[in-house]
Each structure stands twice: as structure tokens, then as C-alpha cells.
Length: 160
Ligand SMILES: [Zn+2]
Image 1 (cartoon, rainbow, N blue to C red):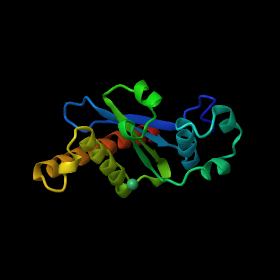
Image 2 (image 1 turned 120 degrees about the vertical axis):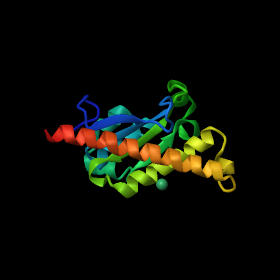
Image 3 (image 1 turned 180 degrees about the vertical axis):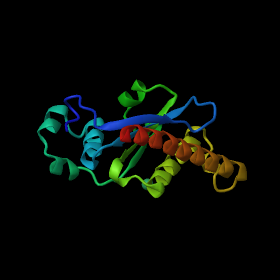
């Protein structure tokens, strides 16, 4: 399956750190690990679209070592990518289906919660301020809960 010919090989949805549901991360769950790596490599510009279309799935897999990845646009994106996203778009979280589970989802949502604290300028207070710790845990819980509600809905639909 190719990412380039428009055939869809991922599901996507948004998760919100806060109850106001304004800011969001985009979650992408790919069918296969190599598709996640190909998407990431193309996004960060390490390979061009033309080049990517010629790569075998094995070659793409060798390009990436991660099992899931959380990116915060403010922290990691290039200037041009950053400008392309609205202020409400916090970043994206990549997974693939066979490697989904409680641990890896919780891990990535913790990264996302820490990025959120950084975004609102409270990360430096995490070690000493109990309110910030509580806020961090609240955001982590919100993101994790929304992930499973939305993903299980997609899975259920796929089984019908
Ligand atoms: Zn990590």
C-alpha cells in the first residue's frame, strides 16, 4: 500500500488536553510500521516524495527506529511547518496498529502532556509545584482516555 497514491493506510482523530476542547494533538494510527516511518521521513523532509515511491517496505523500515512518536510543533517542527499549523494544533502522535497497547499509548500521552506544560510555560514548575503536577496528570489522563474512546470506536466500526 502506498502513501503516495492516495490510498489511505491510517486512521486519524484529535485528542484535546483540556475540557474546552480547543487545542489538540492529531493522532495517526497506521496499518503498518513502515507506513508510519515513511510518513515521518517524508514529513521531516529526509526523503522526497519521488524517492519514497521507489523504496521497498524493508528499506523504509530501516529509516526509522521508533515504535511510536509524539511531535510538538512548537518544539520540533521547522519554521515552515510551524507556520502551516494553527496555534490550536499542538502536534501529532504516530502509532501503528500492531503495537498499540496501554503502555505505549500512556507513554506517548505523557510526552504530549509534558509538551503541553512547556507550551503554557509551566514545565519548569513541575518538580516543585503540586498544582502543576496535578494539572500534568489531569492532561495525561484526558489524552489517554480520549485515545481509547476514539480508537475503540474506530475498531468497532471496522469489525462490522
Ligand atoms: Zn518516549
